[in-house]
Amino acid sequence: DPVVFYPSDWGRLATRERVVAFPDRREIVVDRPTQFTRARLSQFAYLVDTTGTEPGTRGYLYRIRQEDVWAAPFEDADALIASLRSVLPRRYEHLEAWVRDQWRRAHRFRLYTHEDGYVVLEAANENLMGNVADQHLDDDHLRAPISETEAWVNESAVAAVKRTLYDAGYPVEDDRDLETGDPVDVDLTTDLREYQETWVETFLERKSGVYVGPPGSGKTVAAIATIAAVGGETLILVPSRELASQWREELLAHSTVDPEDVGVYHGGTKEIRPITIATYQIAGMDRHRSLFDSRKWGLICFDEAHHITAPVFSRAAELQSKHRLGLSATPVRESGSEEEIYT
Image (cartoon, rainbow, N blue to C red; front, side):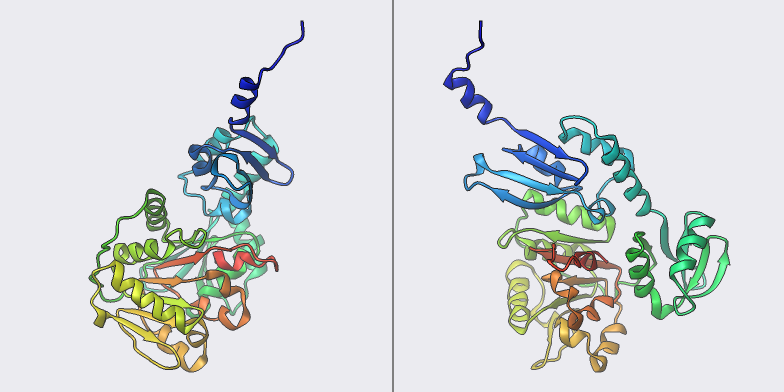
């Protein structure tokens, strides 16, 4: 006899989660995902698009990019693969192999501070130093070799070394002993949502990252919580004077910071304080750049970080600090230059 599905059966099936993987494109489509599935996917994939208008009927398109794997908050590749397998209908060996390779690439080079105070680039093995670092870096980047796997980095070229190796497909782990400047006494006065707490905890473990979320998701409040947790001098870069004023208002509204400790630095007002808010344009100008370079920033926060892909703002992105945080609702760029946000 034929099997007959009654309307009640169709209704039950229509509310179930369905996951479809396209491993060659490294894309995952999920209909009606559970909160567990969405949380897992957010750890190693980027949400590209959604369909439907009601929460219970939406479909989600995720894409796994190399920068997502590089920044994934896992102790090792096995933990990352286990999380990937937990959301897919079956194993995809080719996809897993690609993810493992990207994970390895993210742990092949690191910067650290030598006991004599200078910065050293260290490769995981001699082949990487010879076939990758030496092929992409020159005397402007490296002063001299120290060993078969280590080289002395020019102090002014740290950002260029990180960018060059990133472009070559090898993000550099930054383990330098950077100063955080004078302590900043500030506490958050607003309760965080669970996902905001996860953002902050993950960032503090990695010391760098990008908070990605739609407008109204609380990226600014999460950033203020991060400022409080870091507790060091902070530079906040924004694309406009209006946003600089809004940031100051948000800091005063959601934290215990002393108003005298918050400075605004742009064309009309130029104040350097324990927490300084400046525009990208002015921070990248030669006559102001040395002032920002000379400070020991514990945290630099790049608001609307997608703006740093523009040439006029990119120089400000080379400023160095112990912690680097980006905020963006739209990190995927039509120009394909979103990788600049993650360096």
